[in-house]
Image (cartoon, rainbow, N blue to C red; front, side):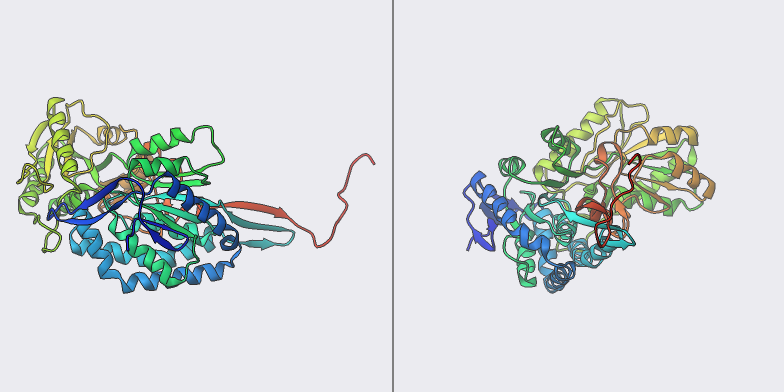
Length: 476
């Protein structure tokens, strides 16, 4: 049986172009199939539209119970989920297991968020209920191919929407396990449909009869989606688009701890998290030099290898991504950057990279997000300059301050432009019980995680009376 397209509870072969997923760690082919074509995309949307009537009218408790069973199904398949993630994108198995666990944990948090932020509330003479949008398209990213689309799909279904899921073409394997888990939970046919494919499949879905788009990915792609739906206020867009994230280290006592925070912030998941630190802002002088030296030591010692070994870092998602990092490094040097530690690519045609650090204090570095293990260093003469450089970005997703000074942290909260702002913690630290998103090019003011409940339903406010009452009218 092929698992290219899932419509109305049935798997079928895709009628579009064939493609495959290559494990960047081993070079093996881990998935082969065909994209869904425009007709299959239309059929998936039609199926979701037909299922919406009954699903949206199903009691919330019943919908929540199905999602709870989905959580149980994910737990039962945790190792298969982790293996699929690791083989598709090269993420170390220990890290993939944490992602699989977060997928199962998402359900209880989403139920709590729905009840707290949306749900149905009644006061004397007034009521507030929340209604689903209808049919939502979910575009998944490659870096968290299970957790991030799951974070859109679960709150969408809880709110009564139906959905079409298009995974990243780089990481297609986990989608089948997710669909099997929903089926095992008893999700009615048509409520969630799946179409595999790349740009053509995604384009067909954008032009289909959908009521909203939920997207996590690059600013370039998100901006294109925003432009596509320009003049369409009837389409609900929730866009999470990454960041050029700053981390300021301001003279903490423990240099080693500061270096650990910076290293983790920049290089976990091989730099492929949208909340990774891209720009490390350090004071001029010996303290900043000591932090750089400590990070260099960690880069030299970090374990890098295939997902099935005990390593901290795997490869980037593809050889194309590895080459993009190499090219980005060369561009920074050409624009005036100074290499502190050059990228190492053991296999010139492979996807493994040992991290780089580049001083861009005097460089004309572009305000762009590079998904890879490159850390840009900026030296600041004083804390005012540090805050100015931190905010010198069109993005606003994540940021951080490492400092023992509580007053400086209070200032950072007022001045730093970041939706996720951490103190003495990695910038990648985020909780599903909090919102995830930020201003600027990092999104369109629709943060996800705990606040996904907000964009999955619209409020309906009512003033009520048990019988018709004539309103008071002046002048009669």
